Image 1 (cartoon, rainbow, N blue to C red):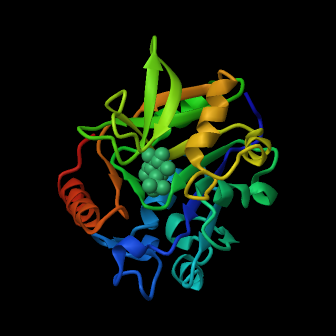
Image 2 (cartoon, rainbow, N blue to C red):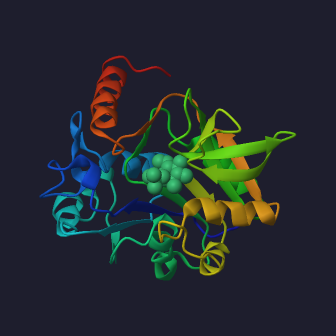
Length: 249
Ligand code: G1P
């Protein structure tokens, strides 16, 4: 267990090409989801889990919009939010590496800025806090996990994660919520670029598996990868609206 407070990191870069023309003049993570901009949801998820020291890593042509929209985080009861800028498209793990000056020596909870969850992440954060070391990923059971990182299990343990497999070996997706111990930045330095020339978060998680240090938690309630497509964005809007009108405990 670590005594230092956990820090939160939201990854919100990219050019959002799949959502053009919606993303021509703004960042994908600032598009509306029901009554709020998309990025408000992951920020609230962190704050609700007791994580108040937050860094937003952004990039692309409209990074300044984040500052104009979120400022110092008053909407969330915060008095400060930190920002970093990712140049180019180096992948999730490369974006995370930019958080080192902010989070060195701390444990971190990372959320992809377009990942929304219905019921929060308190159980996962609590479990992660109890660990001596290592990492924790959140899983969600899906009818078709092929577009995501998919875990391979042996005796209830994850022994490998395959990125976007054609023939998934389980029914679970590794969603965009990750928790890492203080070694994460050294681990990122050992990664090599993938075929799409990015530092992949799946390779980072597999490096933790090799050390026997990857834990997992299954997410209750719905999960949305809102920025994945127009359909996903529409569906996320509808799910948020339904949940707001008819909240479950
Ligand atoms: C990324 C990760 C993938 C994960 C997904 C969750 O995919 O590489 O493992 O399941 O986020 O949203 P990408 O958004 O790069 O396609």
